[in-house]
Length: 138
Image (cartoon, rainbow, N blue to C red; front, side, top):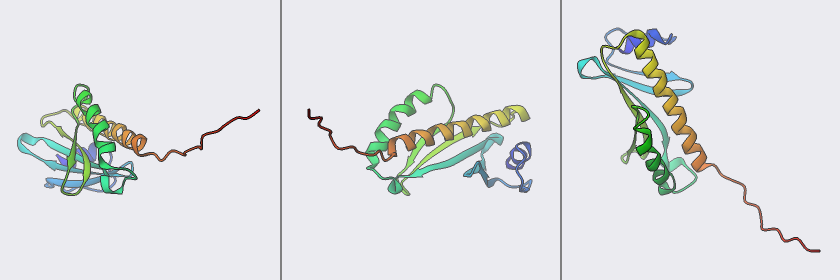
């Protein structure tokens, strides 16, 4: 299924037909794919490493966890925190037995979710300029 998806999205590197795990670089971001039971395909992408952010973990995890609950009603992608390497990961299972159009559609929806989550992380970690308090005098 990795090879099928790569072919459908026009990926420039050939994926061996027997590949059950493969890494694609899409829009400059690495997506790991692996086949599961029943012909399903799981896509996973590291959104960021918390240790590399210019703020405390809690300043990112708390607001993102509030978003995650609501997003589960809109999409199939799941946000996860991997405490072993300190990463935020977004993953989604693409079901087996999908038509070509459905498979591409689910993968595109997953990539859109990745973009949305990366934007939220960026908003939360953006370093904003601090302006000194101004006092106007007559």
